[in-house]
Length: 212
Length: 136
Image (cartoon, rainbow over all chains, first blue to last red):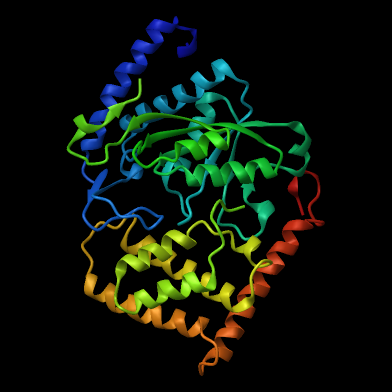
């Protein structure tokens, strides 16, 4: 039985419960790192969130996957979506939400593509879109593990739009509300939905806001 | 296309200058400026030497961040990074300076990198060998 077949209030209760459970995962050693670590953009902060440590264990991954799927499903209640677009990080490799790409694709029954902004040849920056997709006016959701400023999401949207894909939504597991470029995202016509808001100063899981 | 502005020679030179004083903050600032620059698009817009310096900056800072900052799980020796920053700053200044001894090598490297990315740009604008389904 799909969770979408449940009535709205029951479904929300399930999701709320999952979010509260998942918030405890931030206490896992390695998830929040301190000291010299910094963001890919060169900015320095007191702490750094490492999504990869979240999804090492199957039981935790299942809940994280459910939360991502719920973010997708909520959008699909409001708009038609054809594909999920996962972002390959500038550092390359299988890090971040891209590790959940196949699982989330199966869970949401949506095909997915990979956006690779670091590729030198421009048409290789979206993997999975064929030349014959150009006139199909596909609608995508960008999926990311974490958004600090949102620049990576905007880059990905730009690459997808250059391929004729419509992008109006992005989802992230965590964001930094104090650093996110809200106006820029709005100007780019991207609505960012997320599960958790990380604080400017991390003082334990209680300082993480659940976006419910 | 990058959402970032193109980095000017003067701006890059000024950052390199501060790096020669051992300011790791300037190294961070350099990383911030180059991280999202689109080298393929940039190759057609700026001259070879500046392109070479930006290309070098993006690759080197990429390696620094991938190994010492993002994802790192150990305390590294900041003094070593400072010494590296000074050398890196000097190299960038040399690459960007007119009339210094290694100008010719800097030009050659810049030209080489720029030619490669111009070719990427050319391939990007004319993917003629692509067939339906993306199969070559």
